[in-house]
Amino acid sequence: MTVAEFRAAEGGEFTGALLALWWDARGDWQKAHEIAQEVPGADGAWAHAYLHRKEGDTGNAAYWYRRAGRPVAGGDLPGEWEQIVREMLARG
Image 1 (cartoon, rainbow, N blue to C red):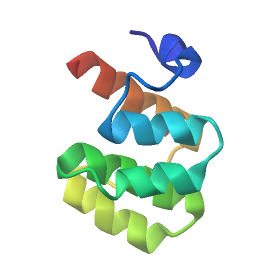
Image 2 (image 1 turned 90 degrees about the horizontal axis):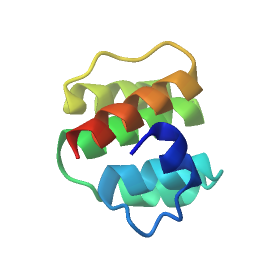
Image 3 (image 1 turned 45 degrees about the vertical axis):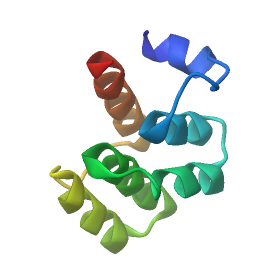
Image 4 (image 1 turned 90 degrees about the vertical axis):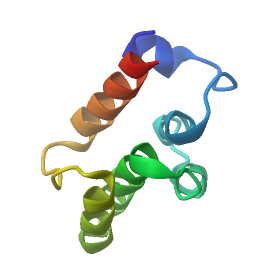
């Protein structure tokens, strides 16, 4: 699946961090955050970090980037969202 197909999908086929990012793409940060904070492991932490960075809470975001084993992101938010989605989709 491509990022464009992911954006156009209905959402019911996704779980975990991808579902959180799908909701974020639809403008529902709260729903995305609720899902991300329940996803265990590095993927959930990465999505959670992105969401807190988007929110403007850089301190909390830095904590979640560390939990994800990722460097703190500093680029544009849409680019980071796409990078996360692309990597998670590639893993299947």
